Length: 401
Image (cartoon, rainbow, N blue to C red; front, side, top):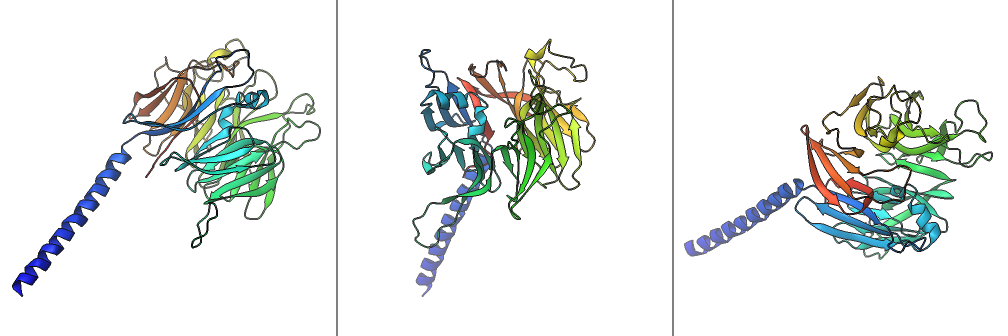
């Protein structure tokens, strides 16, 4: 009997040790994974055959601070019309979720690729041209704007042994929209809309409530008193705060060169605040770092000689700045060396600021330069990655398990 008890005790101890080892390994894996910088980006390389009007090559990749560099997708533009679209704000065709990247390569299909397996998990064609893709990172839901409608692509749970797709694409609004942003709770979409018959390039700003299926115009496509045939609003980015209180756009008139600045609307009160004096030379996109503070890059090295920028501090160097939407106060992030032009700041979950630096020429949108990705944390700037080719989309992937 005692022998049997000893055998049982030994088995229990052995099972306990195995369980402890599994838990310890899981903890160690999570600990070390959490310390890795993981960034997804899309780089573009020009076609070496200058006689062709298309053939530009795009690569979507996932890199981390341990030296891993994985290819997620790769494609070339297939005709001159597609190539033309990919030279005009190409970031609008890529969106980085928690576990998947969404993109289009021919403006006709939406494609999802899984970070972990690096395999395509969803592909669906549409009957109209795709013009914008964005993501609600928290819920891993993507919003797609075509030339005719808005769609939401989201995960759906399988029932039993069903073989249907893990994702469903829903058509949620009719019309021609641009730069859509989906709220964190997936109830609202803020975006530009082009529906003025007098001038289809003129862009108003609208709020779409997916719960009540309603649309509300926040402010007009008109700027000043001139007719829309002479001057009108353009929109270059949109964002909505986590608590759905504030929406922010970067905007300008149709004048050339455009003087891009920020406008914020309090969605609770309806109050609109224009920050044209102190947020001019705004480089979109920006990012909410809290419910009432918005970070973006400000300054344009090439705008010397174009107008009076005396209201902007250090106007001809691009640097991260933070706008307090309640007070209108602008705070410059002074920790970036002045020999670096910082574009496209992203606020990470670790309270670090990520940004890119490149030999940037705003008037040559299809000219490609090599790009550096930096991290600013604890007042220290560190070069994380050097990318051969120009980056047209990137994001910090907070967690991949």
